[in-house]
Length: 188
Image (tube, rainbow, N blue to C red; front, side, top):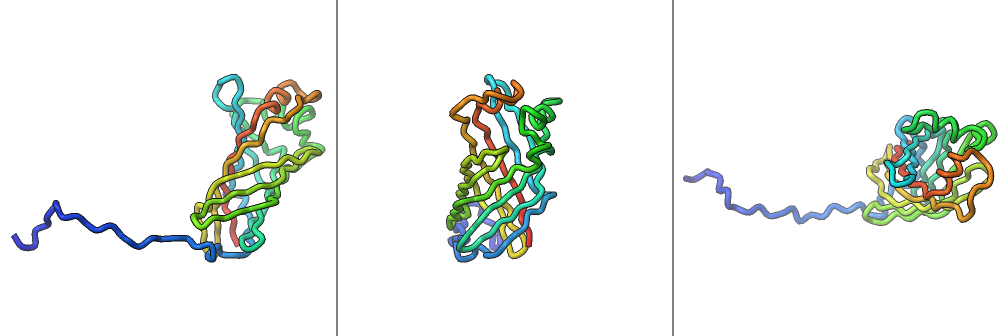
């Protein structure tokens, strides 16, 4: 009958490709929204489920444009873990020494944004009196003229030398690679 829908008709796929051109990076400076950020380190020990932690962020910024940059400032004392009492052990003397080192800082030294919204960020993580290089890969999950959301993951390699001082739990965890996941919203 005329007007009936034929279920065998193939619908042409949408041929318009939606690209996010590099020119539309929405250049400018975006400040971190501290209520919409997750910085989660995780460590595997002896084939057990990973030990997970979470830091609060005090501040940070993301600059998009010719000289792109990502900077974060984490509150050392804010560490929370999935094991009772572990956060206190890791942030007190013999661990991250939060009383003497209240912040952990990350600042990118190189940042590449590809046309498909993927990010590659290389930077320095300043923790205690040491600077460690950290490479993060991920994507711009959302971007408009008022906000940008990034999702990045990376691995902080295990140190080449064993720790000679500190709490034994901090030594055991510090000798393993630390997986880092970051999800953050930056706003104008």
